[in-house]
Image (cartoon, rainbow, N blue to C red):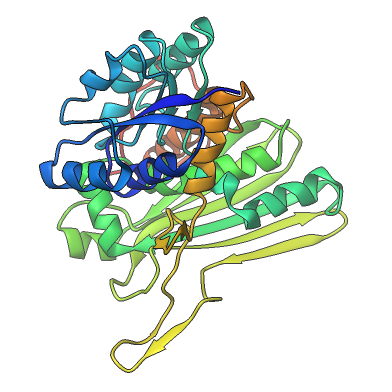
Length: 355
């Protein structure tokens, strides 16, 4: 076991959780942060007692004493070039999803990590949500028997949806359903997805954003063991809805069924001023005093320990690449109005969004 020196690139909502978690971890010796907004840079540097605080992320990459980097930068088009720089510089990399915008970019990042013998993981944080982990455990230990079908529904509010779609033309499949595709594929391992069919709905987001943005995307994935799953995700909940994220899971097996309510209705606050609200969500998870409502802090600690103790990461780059192929297939299916078979051909039209 060794201490690690960590760099954080991007200190917004997710990056802030990463930085503050690293600052409290005894396995982290020195923390270095990069942020383009001066006010936020000063705030997070003061909170974390960062050794370096800079607007230029390359200053952190160039440091020989930094061995581990968390990339939480937006827009998402920055993920691949930043991760490539870090891996080429010999840094262990934790990268927020998506891994890249094109499959060949994901392939290059995975190749670099393997060639340089570096830890490389992608931010599919719901694997660290205890409710989601319980579903995985119930399949692994045989409680549910053999998997038969799965349904996952995830929705966020229009305010957050407008923020996401304002910086990226990526679809609900790529930005929201991606978490649940990863979750189902993780649960059903070693089964592989072989066919994808997807449709999209339009309405509320067109009115609120003035852009051709879909509200929701429905994705049916068929696996090589005969199991099918349905994943629905969107960002059209009314602005007054109290949670940033709500998820419902149904996992059916030959010996049982598991229903998971992750809609955060278990914590209800009633005040004279605001009436009834549900103040906490797990995606990404609000700070609550000394801890967080969501799984990102645990996910951050996991990667630090993977580097410091030379342990395997829970989410590999290869798994993230497979998830990416599925949501690209979903976007192609929605565009063509027909099922798409996997694996995708090497030469295919690029799909950055559902239009």
